[in-house]
Length: 333
Image 1: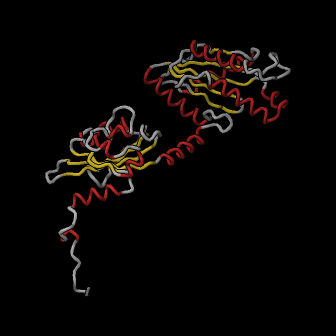
Image 2: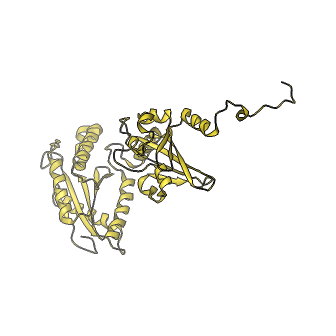
């Protein structure tokens, strides 16, 4: 072929595939998991990479409106469904993270955990939904692509845990405690609910540490941490406040309820029977100060901490291995 000859476009050949068919063939072979819904939310393409990701073969899902079954245990729309049905306002409630592609009107991206029932594994997927319009601007199909970001998400969670967890006990650390207390105080203020706090201190811990060494002391703190955590509700938070002191945040809990939790913690630690000779009980015990506040704009969470600390000091002064409840004062009881 000389330099003056022109290469004819592929579509000039009588055997060339139509543009739509070629596009579908390319999507089918794409290594990125991809499926396509038509304007009635029916699956019209489910590529091989999507089969590998979900464990669902194409023949089971093509022609159906049940793409969601490959990703979730209970019925909920995919991102492509929401675009087709004009329900994009529901995206924030359904996805952990979400946004719009600035350079592509109508295109959405989001991230969330998916159950993946057929694959038998929970995965964190990043999804992109790209609408296809006809000449009159109507949506005729939506292409949804998926990226498995589970490893990246798990690494992120691990890093976040390192930043908020105490390395010895696995409990929340002081930073996490401070952030949570502030958040719970604001919620208590909005909802006009009580907020209780327990300060838990290991009695005679220096004596125990001197007798059993730092390794024994660390084991003691780990076992006490487990005992305290075992008494928590799902929305409570137990943190290592510092050294041998722990703090427990009890949202929407009255002082009476906090006292009951405190007594359960005291008994649970005593029942560990960790020997500490030379003490009254001959075993490791804890003292606990409890305080409750009805959050008010003129108060702040530091007052709750100070009040619980004062109650803890009274428990120590009164002989240890006991709980002390604060008296009502300045909106903190």
